Image 1 (cartoon, rainbow, N blue to C red):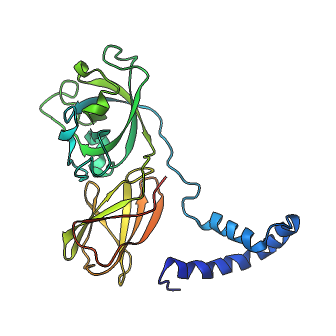
Image 2 (cartoon, rainbow, N blue to C red; image 1 turned 135 degrees about the vertical axis):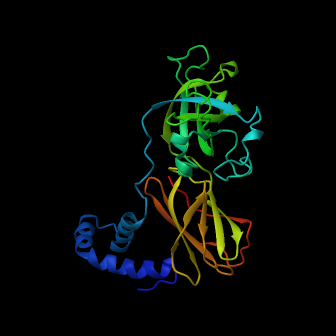
Image 3 (cartoon, one colour; image 1 turned 60 degrees about the horizontal axis):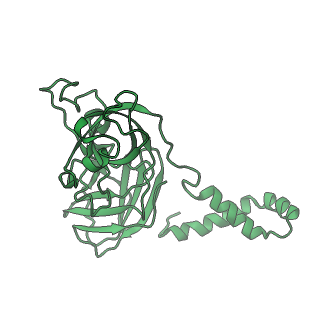
Length: 289
């Protein structure tokens, strides 16, 4: 069956679903005479067909790492970065961000992930602030410095797990004069306000889609795009959080299907209107958990 919209497929499937569970409904409604069979069937339909209804990101265990800081006291030096988020203030990432070492950055796959970090007070009571944690978002890459040893300046060299944090975030857990501190971190769910945002850059036959404000796992594993008159087409990661398409989609409303790194998938139907232009950003009402 070809569907022109989500609604056009929803109701035929709902009628089939209702028919298939009618024997079960007759039993339940006899037990609960005050419940209409239609209301109960619709409730069951939503429970069984709503995506991600019980799926949310699972916090990881604690892992040892180290952390330094950069960007200045106002974090102005953290703008831009290898994830492509641009101005971290206007894109709502703020000052609680970090550049990740090679071992954590994973060629950009970690962009948008959130980490809860505490200073390892037992290992370094002199420079750690005890009992305080800070949650940061991965927005940049900390390149290796192979001219220096891993334990003396080459903090981001493989295989070290290291966070070069925005200074205001780092100073929540460490004393400035320490410079570098041992930390413990765990990957946590990203808490975001509002839905995902899609920025369309590029030119004809080349759409470069930047996805920001991703909740849940925070990072995207795969992504598809669909125009009004085209089928779903897989996008490929260009760099950081930028995904590319080589289709001609001008003048078409655009839909996206996004799968995060923990396997959650959401569809964003017609989130970009047909009047879109390169350089514009469009917000959705859907979010990962």
